[in-house]
Length: 497
Image (tube, rainbow, N blue to C red; front, side):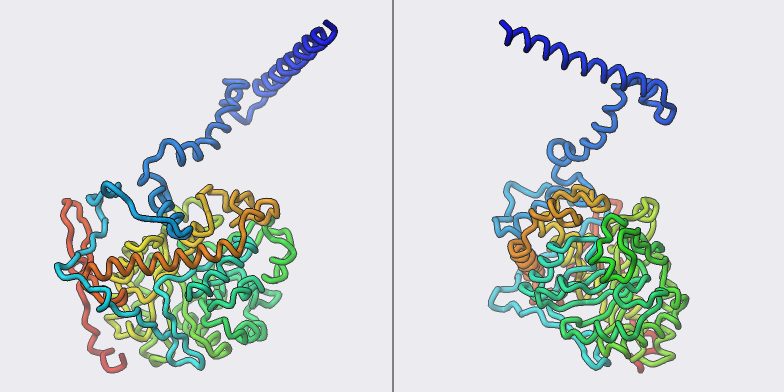
């Protein structure tokens, strides 16, 4: 009986506490003036935020169809998950992808596909033929810019080691060169962002001494000057202060614990002439191929850039142009820029390739395509459109185990990829994930090969625009070479090409 009496008293006490808490929350809600929902619906209104937060998780797992989610749907994510883990990635009973939406790419299989024994190994492409140290790059898929800081140490280690195993390059992103990038022994593309992290003086200008030190690493094969990136064209990089640890601050050359905001552009680059001057400066100091990365919006400036190159001489050209898509990704960006600024890669890539062709610079300037190209079909489309290489960031994040939790900017990434919380990083084993990176690259090569051989070509670099058709408004498809017909080199530039 005493025990029963005690339990009854405890139960009444707990109920009393709950009721008191509800009353307190009720009073707080009806007296506050900042939230109309809580004021009009005290206590109950608080559940709205909780349900809104949980909604993205419930939609992902219970309500969204395989092809519905954004920015990447379940079918795409599962293909990468199965591919990178070495599981069977075939599907049954028919595709869940609709072939009728405008813009859909349909590859044209030929009646006599290429036999395996007739297939050719994909040839490498030389970048920077006029430099002291040209780079022979071979992989058709490479790791696009992801800074140490935006992603974690274990993620960088896994990507570095995986890139070495797969034989592709790894772009550092604008956050500077860390020991973790070098750890795996892979080829490195060093990105120089507008804040020049890792190669900056205290005033933010380019440090030639630090640039020489970076270029001295044999692993560093190229330098990429970032003008803009897909998710935030016209806005510099954003790294929240919570992610700026002592190590990251030292590598970047910035204060610890403070938001790291890059300028909107390189202060010393305000026109085409200054861009070519800056490229020449970096290339002369480093002795290595140097190009630039940009989102394409306006593109008349590219034609004027080509004219300036011819006026200066063919050697003055950037060794490559990396084209990012207006629907590219990032850890943190303003919504107006992420949603509404910059052309998507499907429009931008053919435009750039055609401009370079008209000015006789297509063979001099290599083209790298980036932006949501994470499956074999998307990579194959890019080669049809005229790319020399494809680079991906989010595809490789998925290979590391990203679940698209959309917490990249919160330092709370549940998979340890974009967080510096040691507890959350424990789930990301660089040794295991490096193998997943390797398998992802292999499956991309294999899948692109399937499409290539079905079209009758012998290697991915032999894909042309006539190998793919694009669905139009009337539901019918049109060959890509009809939408973007080949252009002859302008007569005044034909001799210098």
